[in-house]
Every structure is written in C-alpha cells, then in structure tokens.
Image (cartoon, rainbow, N blue to C red; front, side):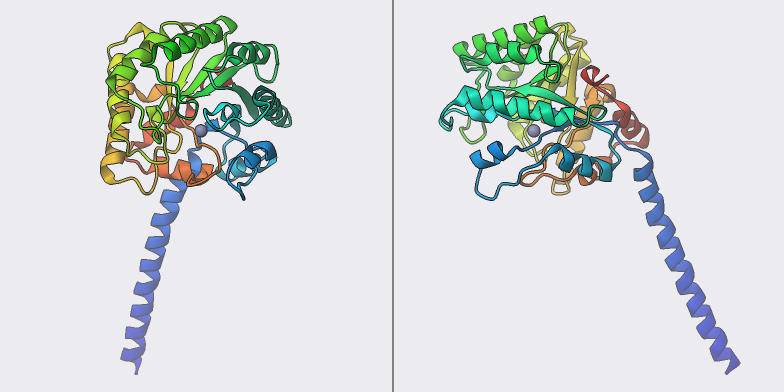
Length: 331
Ligand SMILES: [Zn+2]
C-alpha cells in the first residue's frame, strides 16, 4: 500500500514538474514580447463612414477611438494615420464631387488625429495623377494637422512610372512635397488587379523620383510589395534593386525608409519570411519602420501583427532596434 502511494506521489510530482517547466517556457517567450514594443505604428488607416460607403456593403468604419483601443492592446503609443482620400480618385470608380470628397476625407482624418494630439498624426492623401493633386498638396501644407506628409497609393491610383505622362506628374508631386518639406509615404506597388508592369525598371524610375526629393524622408510601404504577406515575386525584384542602391550608398537613398506593414504574416511560407529577413538585413535594420496597416480585410491587429513580425527569424537585438526606430516626421 505504502509502495503504491509512493508511486502515485512520484507520478504526480513528475506531472507537476513538467507542467511548471512548460509554463515557464511560454511565459518566457511572452516576456520577450511584452518587453519589446514598437514605439510607433508607421502605417495606419482610419475608415470614415464616407469611405465605408464607397467600399463593399458591411465595410466597418474605424475611428481614432477604435484605433487607440487596438494600439493600447499592443502597447504601441503613437501612429501615423495615412488618409485614404486617394480612394476618391480611383480611376473608373470616382464618385461624383470627387475632389470635394478628397478634401472632406483628408479633413476628417486630420480632425480624428487631433482628438489624440500626443499619439496620432495624419498624412494627406490623393491620387497624384489627378488635376487637383498639387492643389490638394498645397492645401494640406497649410493645415497644421496635415502638413507633415502625404500618402500616395500607386496601385489604387493606377500610377505607372513607365508611362511618361504619369512620370511627369509624379515628378511634380515629389518636387512639391520636397519644397513644402512634407514627408512621403508611398505604396509604390503597381496595380496587381490590372497586371501593371513592376520590376527593376520601375525601381530605377523610383530612384529618379527620389533625386527630386532630397530634403524629405520617403517611406516605401510594405517593403515595396502590397501585403498582407510577402509572396510577390515582382515586388521582390523591385526591392532587390532598392536594397542594392542602399547598400551601395546611392546618395538618392540617404533619406529612404521602408515599412513592413502586414509583410510578416502567419500564412507566409518559410521562404517568404527568410527573404524578408534577408532584405531587412541588406537594407540595414536602422531604416526599417514598424507598421501594421488598417483594420480591414485580412489584416492583423497591431498586437497580432507585431507578434508575427517578432517571429520572422530576426534576432532579439534587431527586433529591439526596429521597435525603437522612429521616422523623422514623427519626432
Ligand atoms: Zn495601407
């Protein structure tokens, strides 16, 4: 009897020890997360009721108050709200009173950011190919809540750098932003749905645009891809050229930054994560900015997205540096 009791006691003790060991392990990896938090989310969007109405039925609005909740859950203090006003100028899907809608959306985003002045800033958005592009840039430059920078979305606006008329307009916008000292965040990935060309030629044209904006930070969104995920071979060929330019200290890349918004994703195949890490190292992790992307579609929350990013295979030191990186327009 005593022998049997002793055996049961032994088994229980073993079970207890295993459970404690497992607990310790999981709390250790949690600690790794909870201690390293990005200081800022460099790629966020709000979705106004007007924007939601332009999207599919049931599209959810996201206000500054909602976003603050997401950021708090991730322990992220600050964010830049990239206005999605370019949506009003989407070719073939422009609503009536297009430019009035662009202005209203930019102003709404600015007013939302102003509700949390210590935590949020707003960037002005528009389709750079539209006749009102420079007018809107100048209007935003005069607005204290929109003057820090502009956001362009080459995919949504169907801007094609290899088309001379498009390139001419883009040059004007880059020059104007530089003159006004407004930073640029650009989703440079050409339209996927329209199957626009996107490769080394587009990367070289983009470097030419950079030469027109030497005095402002330029942030390439989604590592030159679109996200979510990082399975995009044409974009890989673009970022290879840009990473080489950075590595060779091409003077045009002096103020160039890259955000990783939605690139790290649990559904990425292992090769995609490896490539992402390789590119981050080639570019240099001091130029990499953490970003999440808006709470729509397949996108993760800031907390989930940062967690996915910490699992890509970067070292703790690299993750810590990236977490602390802050774009000049946020300082
Ligand atoms: Zn975005």
